[in-house]
Amino acid sequence: MSVVCSASNISFSYTPKRKILQNISFSTKDGEIIGILGKNGSGKSTLLNIVAGLSKHYEGDIFLEDKNIKDVSLQERAQRISYIQQTKLHIPKYYSVEDFVIEGRRPFSRLGFYRKDDYSLLDEVLSFCDLNDFRQKLLCEMSGGETQRAILARAIIKNAGLYLFDEPCSAMDIKYQKEFFQIAQKVKERVPCSILVTIHDINLAIKNCDRILLFHDGRILYDGAAKEISARDLTKAFETAVSNECDSKPHFYY
Image (cartoon, rainbow, N blue to C red; front, side):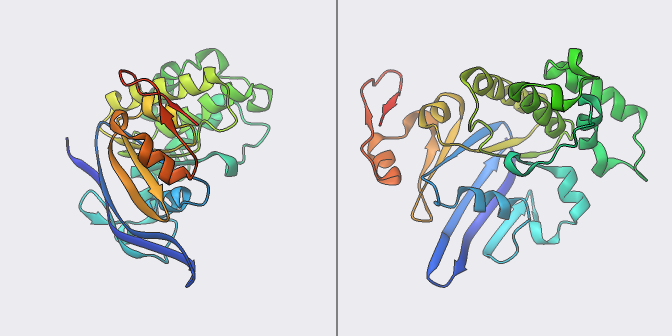
């Protein structure tokens, strides 16, 4: 596996007295789904913004393969990184599913025109996300879970090397949570890529992620295999009692 993204000594503060991230270092490899866990305000979303190249005022370095993110053009970032901030995504009511999804190819288009290859990729991705029957349906007419699949399809159609998902499972039912990670697993098998996911549900992360980054007080408390994370570290990170009553299949109670 090759390194897709690496962070070296990342620190970030909103004010001198409020340090959000302190000396964060890690790297991601293709074929990994990495869950980022931590209590609210621990810096999870801030880290994704920095990795995506959206935040400039930080210390340290982010590399996309061997290139510093600060030296990567906006267009190249848009081609190589797919970042879904779902709470901030505005979807015009008149968009059909296929119109919305193919816009994921906009960073690759010339003068706003899509090529034959783009439409072939659209067909492939709609099938991949089980959206063929919804091609002409307006997004405003779809359920929350169906809309989320369309959002995923728009991200996937980039064939990016790095996928960043900020709380994709929040406020979603069990069916959608399962669908999200099923698609995420297929994505990493489809193209060489890393997937970083911020998530609140400890058990959902452990069950579906290959690796966990656990944040506490702006630092990484744990970086390792998802199924090897301890109740002790989780208790410290979330500042509430967490216990594991089953050693054979990690499942935490809190």
